[in-house]
Image (cartoon, rainbow, N blue to C red; front, side, top):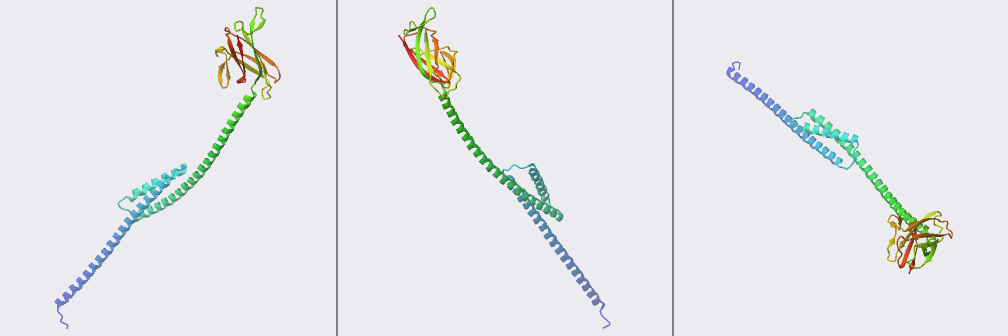
Length: 301
């Protein structure tokens, strides 16, 4: 027993050494395997989180575009806030496009995305509130506009009624002749007037008239216009003598101004024919206050 074989002893030592080396190699391989697996899992996790954040940023941008599409007039404060948000979105998108991101980069990006999400929510709430206020104001404006239109229409109707009433009052207040009498005269060398019935001797017409009682008529001075038509129906007038009646400009043959007091005062107009009188009927029309006052005619032989 004391005399063991030295060769066998050396072989056993070699075996022990190989066992230790193999065990060490197996341990190293196991460590490297698990480390590589952990790094691979971490790399996958980082990339997944980066993709999730990119998707989240795009959703936030779409939401901001949707809110901004609402037709609401933004205040300067809201415009500045939106500008800052879009700048932050652009920065995040650029950062997430980088090939590699550390966990610290991801943590920072997550915090920024959270802030953006909160901003867009508040921004959306403000826009919705503004839209409701605008809708209410538009409704109020439309209501006021409708009321104003109704009032304007009523005012226009009243104005038309008032104009019609004024026109009726004006017509009612116009002077009307009660009696009209036309006489033809010749003028003697002494200046004395002699009544005639023949056209060949007539030189002038005298129109005597009175005015019918009218409590609406203004007790004041009134202009009376005379228009004379010869037997052929032609107006005998000076082209420069114009007045307005029945809404149009007319020529007149002669005119006088009278003082009206709503009494039985008699008035007359002398008209000298600038031409020779013709046989036939001479018609006259009197106007006062813009309306026909009366009509009559005289027939000369």
